Image (cartoon, one colour):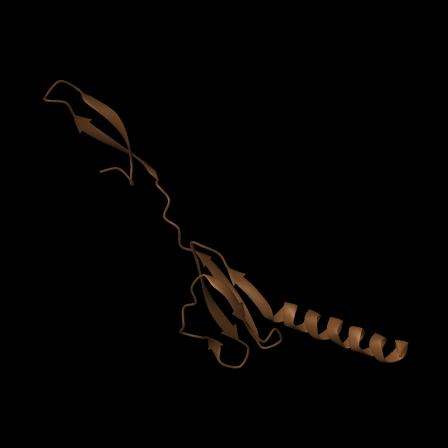
Length: 93
């Protein structure tokens, strides 16, 4: 009986390891495209969640698409007095 249970446990561990290698996550604020070793980059853009891939055939390329505010210096005139510097961010309105 032990050999039968041992074989079942070993086969379950191997199947679980293979399935674990085929799953990957795309986090919030990221997108993914798949590189296929035979067809090249696929045109589908994959959104956030857990996805399935064939690890020896596909490779996910994950991009960060979150927006970031940037500091852009600009020179402004203050009603004819003097040119001053103002620090603005691209996220401001």
